[in-house]
Image (cartoon, rainbow, N blue to C red; front, side, top):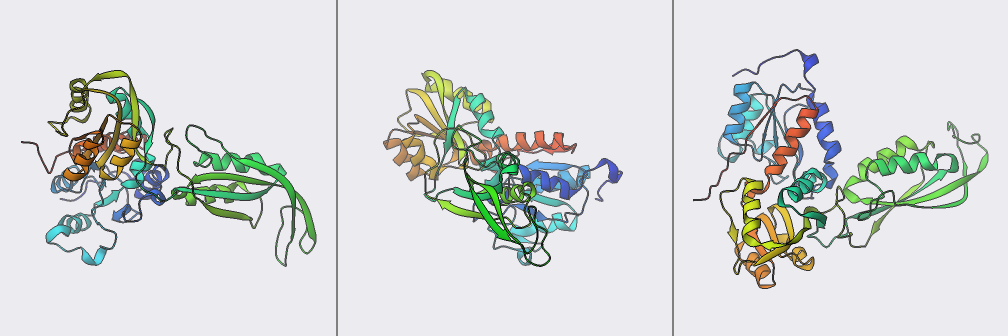
Length: 381
């Protein structure tokens, strides 16, 4: 079925939608093994509407064709792992839907672990639905997620540069933001042939009153931070250093680009049965798996969408009475239960319902018509 056409002036470009998605969920914050961004299609196209679904499914593709929508936005990458490129896409087998989307002129965008780390709307919405006050994020890896930036700025531009860095996510430590350190000093330079120094003249040794600014940022935001630096700094050539920071992230505060999910506290401990009701209502879940023995009363809850087995240890260290996730696996869940953390598995798709709600909200802001699909590929019986 041919895509319905509308006046181009009324529809955003695919490039502009991709830009907005990547501004809110920078690809650099995705895990190294992930595959995010525009996976099918041409960025020069026009978006006539978007189907939103966790996975690329036959229903999503047929719905896009029927409505004349030119875009599908998924949480899970349809080409995964990243090593599977266009050469692997054929008209049969696992890549059949990718092939059909491309042939129909329907683009597919995925925002996955970058979304999970950056879209703070999700942990905030989950916390509200469960009735907890969010305390912080959960971390599952051992590698430090931070990079330190040191840059030398003329005194006249210190605030401009610092504000630009803070605006894109630098300087956030736990529940604090706008964190930096500045120290004065003398900078020297001599511009060569063809240079246009901001201060002084080419060919002459200049001595400038400069300030050394130090700040920290999640390593996945490197591209955004350096872009902000270049756009705000007055020099043709900017002297800056980047350092790996070997420190654990704060367990407090919701910081975009750092950690997954959320953990938080109820005003007071409540019976497990009450939490079960809230979970079914919040995630529209038909049922769940729960480790035995059941937690009698629950006060601190941890949550991560999708497969949360790598965060079970963090949930235990943080003192969670209950950890809610999409799936965890028998042995990992049993080990966590033995250490005192009840593990509730609500289903992978069910746990990611707030992805759909958040993307739908964003699309409304971008004036993109949407159809949301949350049809499961697995069901509780």
